[in-house]
Length: 404
Image (cartoon, rainbow, N blue to C red):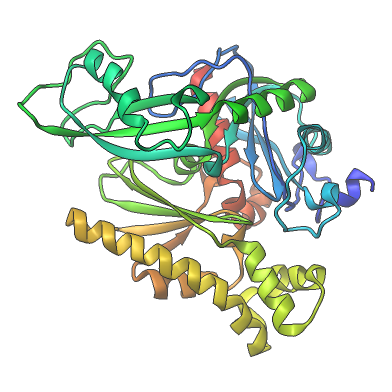
């Protein structure tokens, strides 16, 4: 099938902006070297005037190219391509493709989106990583550097030698970040406990990403777990606890953030493809037609049978998310100020009122493109598509920041 047929609603527009909303999976990696900063996984930092952020999902590849113009991050192009067409499965459904096919899809979307740089960064799916908070005694960083890999064995279901591991101390309200690479010492107050964010990725995952990067001939400066990229693009500096709910194709992810630090993460085994399947089963229509109905109408459909079918998986996602939020609030004694929705499933028409009702707090749609300058005539399109591109924008923004 021609690549152009794989691009949904694509149309050429001025300034090389690809006006499309599609779907996919992304991958890549290079010489691996951790950085001890808030966002892990970095390689070298060759300076490039334009940078690209690439997002890996289970059903689509999303790319965003940015450039710094007079100190402002400026959108040059963006695009998304459905992976279902490479797997002979319906658009919007999760896929399990080989590295060669993913590399081909990635190359296709880079070409069709008129991407002009190979320099950038790439996200790693949250489901391919372990991100968890552990308690450790407040010891010197040198001691923690030896103790944490031993403690990590309790949380990692495979041999510690099979994963790449990183960690950093979650600062108290009046402290700065202390990581394994810092020369500062953690204050010792007897057996006082500290929170440590532990991050691990299986080496096989990194190897697979590396194969795709090489096949696509990309100059990737870093890999970053999508949780960090998405948060960067939709959350500003705030001390109040807040949450990000990322509704993907196969699964949904909930992140709780406080003082800019991830305090909790939770995986929900439902996603937007479950909404499509529910409509297909309830109305006896093909998956392709159900996906089209979902995208066009969402919860605004005039047939109550359609909306009831869509609400079943949605209410499962929202009810579980609300349970996690309530548990955190009860445990911490702090109130979640608002929830931001990102991911392809969050653009469903009519979702915001339902999410507000179930999550019992203010709910907003993520608007990552608000952090970049773009042609005014694209404002409405970018606002609508924004939640889907939160991770890709976040990756590109980090790359620009690193370039200085």
